[in-house]
Image (tube, rainbow, N blue to C red; front, side, top):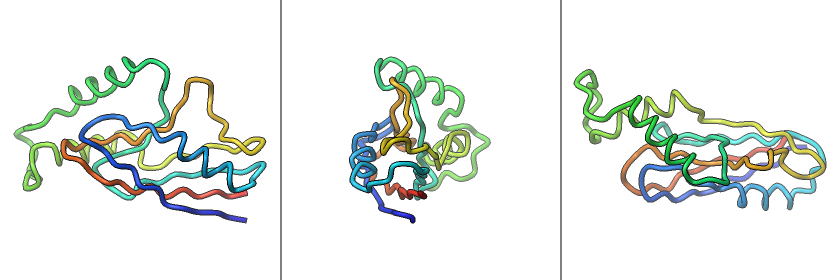
Length: 137
């Protein structure tokens, strides 16, 4: 038995956007006691991650670190037509994840106490991102 949906995640520029509640709500409606929930983002300039959701400074530190690791306006970039954040966004997406898998245990995602699911937007402008969610039971 497989179940699938697509969620929209609106962003307002670079940053980590938690959408754990949306996914947990949908998973809870599927009546699946045990299985695997897989997530896939349908874009090349954002990513998915599981990260701490208790202390906002963790998000800030991660964003600052990745921006320092992959700076804008690097003279080595040739893919610049869509702006100075475009090529760095592609590099950041390849360094992080475009898909995640989380087990379902007793009808719930098996996340740890402080874990949340995030879309990590790597572009400056607002975007509407699509995340495909698939349950295999």
